[in-house]
Image (cartoon, rainbow, N blue to C red):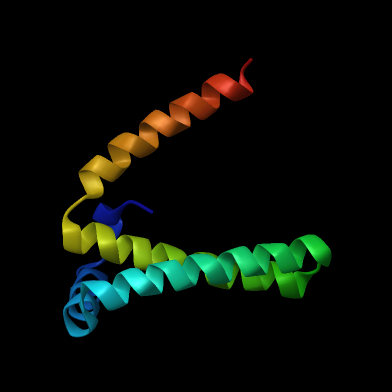
Length: 97
């Protein structure tokens, strides 16, 4: 989802969360959420079933929310999408070999 597609409500909530808990706490949360996603993926690799798949989705959502928060607060969405497009093009080259 593009950050531009976020609702005004979501943008306000993200800014309030960042302001309330501060940069250090929110960056720590990004780290923790990424770790939880890694853990969920590992569980799914050991036992692929709907429960572990749902855990991956839940953790992915948490990670995306934290990333969106960071992009909004730091006003980095334009740079993010530039880099994202470059990496998608690189992936396209690899899959079309």
